Amino acid sequence: GLRFSPGGGALPLPLRPEIGPCAEPPLKSYQMDRGRIETDLRGMLEQDGVELVEGAKITAIELAKDGALHTVRYEQGGASVARTARWGVDATGRQALLRRQMKLTRGSHHPASAGWFRIEGRFDINDMVPKTEKEWHGRPCTAQRWLSTNHFMGEGYWVWVIPLSTGNTSIGLVIHEDVHDRKHIAGLDRTLAFLRQHEPHLLAAIEKYPVKDFLCLANYSYAVGRAWSEDRWALIGEAGAFADPLFSPGTDFIAFANCFTVEMLRTDFASGDLKEKALLMNVQYRSIQNASMRLFRTASAIYGHPS
Image (cartoon, rainbow, N blue to C red):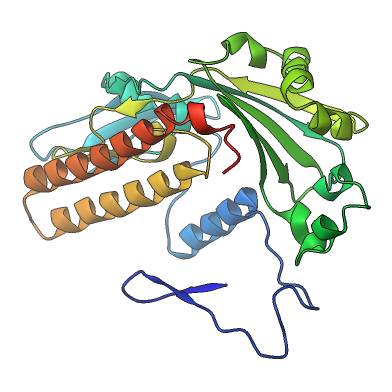
């Protein structure tokens, strides 16, 4: 376990001497249920007095300059509504309404795509290893191994196995297109064929589970020219940039962007220099963004290396 110091460093979390790692009751890991988190956040917003407009479709965003208010136009229940605001923060995900409107989408030079599906039921990767492998099955936390995100990796690709709170399991194939053609994630049959060729042991283990659905996303990685403006607008989450799903850095980008946006708001309310602050936020964000893109862009060659 880890605990975090006020300075941000990770420090060892002492264990009770009579309870070793994964003793009973086990120390379990788990996947965060994003739907439950967002439901909780929605409730917190309501408690704070935030007005939520739901079931609406945005038809126009009119950004203003020189301190004037922005205007958002939307349709709700057959009526057209216009609302004004001092700040506009785009959190529309891959719709990226502002990023597209402002033509701020930038390439990442990381051509990669993903196809994924859910299988019905809980898949335990321990079942892939014969019971005669005593060392494998005797390791600490073996019974909880299925709770982790598990990766199967080869040159230019990796496969995730993620348990879901519904009791089902998510299986995803990520390919780097400098090694593998995008066609391999163009449908369930082609994705399974790729697994049959490159991860036959995994495919044999999951084939008995019914497949519930399939989705794919081609060329998922992109950068953004700027995400904060002195004219009081911001882009956060996937409405800004997205690097790669490995290690879930999208969550980090959301956290950075949220913190940077709050810093912009604080500067505005304190009558500070928004131009200087926006420049600082954009330079810092692009630095993080570029480093992340560079890491994943050059990683395909070592994904199949044992160490």
